[in-house]
Length: 186
Picture 1 (spheres, rainbow, N blue to C red):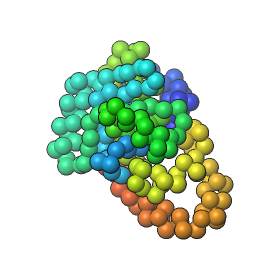
Picture 2: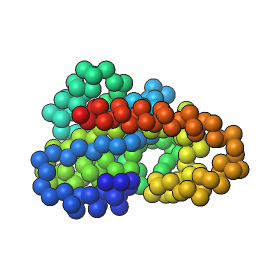
Picture 3: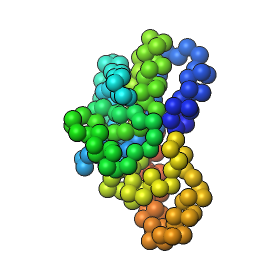
Picture 4: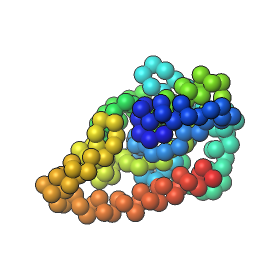
């Protein structure tokens, strides 16, 4: 679908009539126990006052399969937001202790599944946390819709060359996270 509500709207319009809807992609981990590369299997997704529970059968199946293949994972609530959030904002979202991750798409997809009366599940891989260099600096590189702004990246790295090495170390870890997600989906 791409990032954010706009990408989801385009993707949902082209869905046809699927028998199930699986939201897979990246998220920001919330809390110190959630690490880069961990999987998040959403028991529910929330956005503002709306809440969408995962299909119980899909949730049980995904949890069992993820456990069986030995990947690190968490089961919990994903908060869908409309703009990229900072580490502080993600931490504030955890005030009630239920938010495991934050993304920009899952609740929109869950709403589309609910509207169509089809089962829904979100599986995300953590691409950044407050403890990671990307999370600490990443929001400076992103537009409000979550897309990377190449000119901002170049400008920021020119002004802060010390960021280059941590960003280079992060790239292979993100490739591993992507492989974790692909394995979980398979």
